[in-house]
Length: 428
Image (cartoon, rainbow, N blue to C red; front, top):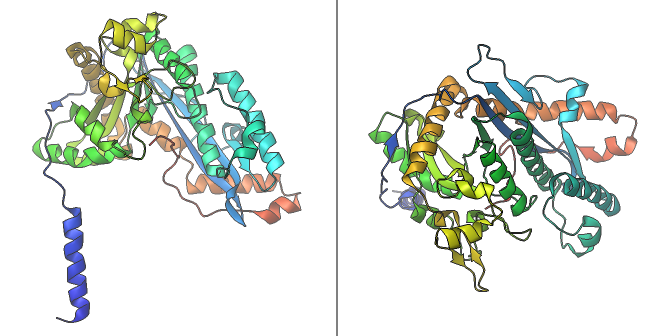
């Protein structure tokens, strides 16, 4: 055997050993059947997308970003299959539809960046009571490195998603409806925890079940071999509540021991937390285990916390004093509540989890072969994604609009396109 072959064989052995994983421990799981509740009036779904549309040739972080959101809704018991939508369509659009695509900038002129970000900051504070922070005009000088335009587009898109979600809860959906949101229920740096917390309470008071559908992240990767092992053992859709040990293991991080992504509740504007509870792994199609998702339920829909939605009390006080629940205290004595600290009642599975999963499975079976998502969320995801074709059309249209400017035509170029991920997240 020559030296080259020996090297290849040695490398193959290293690869095989590196891919070995500990034996998979299969948790207790339950199977479900599709069923739409007669009491459910409407189902809605919300998703968003962001991309970089132009770049400045000398610096890939400079340029023009674009983002959009799409909400779709269907009266499930209606005779028509017409779907209401608020956002862009999936086909070629008119100039009027350009209004659904929002632009942001990060350009060589720092004063213009500061002005643009400050205007957006002021609008965001007014519309959404967003996280209380210094306006960019004050803190820009202290930043060591400005974020790229794609990151800025992602921040604005996330804010847009939360605002759309609140609008749907308050104005669109009637009681006894189901609302699916793509992505985590943990508030990102765009919104204060107290704002997100109040939105969760409002949804519970309006009798709207809001469910977050997650298809990526640390926990998703951690669960993948477990889902695959269960899928080999059953041919029926199944689910299981994600064990706390798996959640803690997947988010263990010595660099960032305070895991903000696990926190729930919103006492004030300094908290970074959310409303995602009872994390549940759900595989609608064992024949294709990669269709599995992680579902986060609104904590104010849980048996022990439902009454809190109507009380002027913080989750922290309710959880500690009323329920005697456990917390994760910090070195300074602050008692954070993680999603793994929440108290779960058996009625949560009977009245919330299983009925919702049956409905999601019913939605999945409508078009699972096409999207691998619940039907309406699949439509929202498919139609909102800023694909290479859509971004190319946007570039062309804006170049036509801006054709009179030599400096724009000379300095802005189409950047190398990365279609996935279709949006950036800043929760890790």
